[in-house]
Image 1 (cartoon, rainbow, N blue to C red):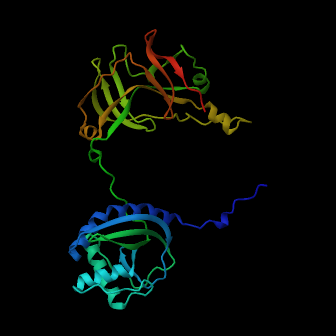
Image 2 (cartoon, rainbow, N blue to C red):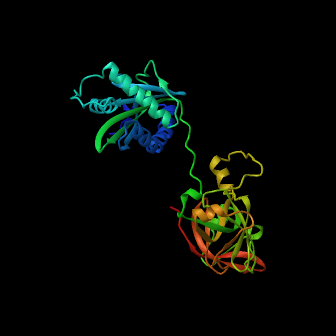
Image 3 (cartoon, rainbow, N blue to C red):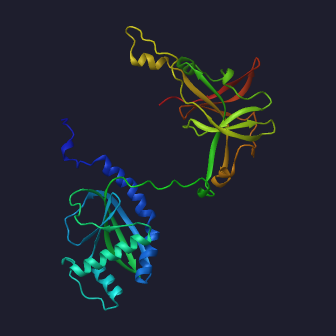
Length: 344
């Protein structure tokens, strides 16, 4: 028997909380090394910080939690009593007392932890102040953290409540180092009707017409562009298989209708089926490390072993649909179909 999905049983989560979760999770993990250094300097002991798990939750109503404010964010820390006792003993240069796991933090101990949290945040580059009223019950990113102090593991739970955290800067291409990036070399782009694409057969030819940017000698123009992208790098093809790098260029994946025309009885499906599709012709690809890609600029030359007689790939909307070879059809560049992939 079929029944409706129990949507009411799912916990409601706002989009703002999801955005906080994504950006704050990255910030927490990226800040671990800075927190290790700052806390280690303050306590004068080796310190390691590990984020075990992050999830969305609610800010708890617990007196053991220490809350700070940073711009539009509320930052909370819930420490186990053993960790609080260890830190107090280290700061006050006293012996470590026995602790009751269920006992709330005393006022002096809570003040000590708050001062330590403010100074640790300051050394990490965050200006914080004590938060008067904790955001009890509000949506929060909850991070379970392990602190290794002098090799001893302690548990800590961190809470992030508030507006969306600032996104971390994306790594630069050069920072990817020796990671190999393979970018297809598109030597032709042609818009065809759907029935023409479906009518392609093995041994037949797809004429590129004005969409072909390569000549019989292997010279011409091309674009280095990823399969699903519409922005690439223009290059000049040379007969000796070298590529001269140009400027950024567009490489459309679809064709916009010239002018919408309505016909009685015509459905949305009919309109979509009449829209031409864009077929890209790829003559292999260029593979280099990310560091090498980052060094390229207009006017640079890329050495390749690509030849005009090598197989080409036919791609539609980022998906490979067939393979073939470049041919000369009465003075026009075309692709002789050697392999077609069935749609799934």
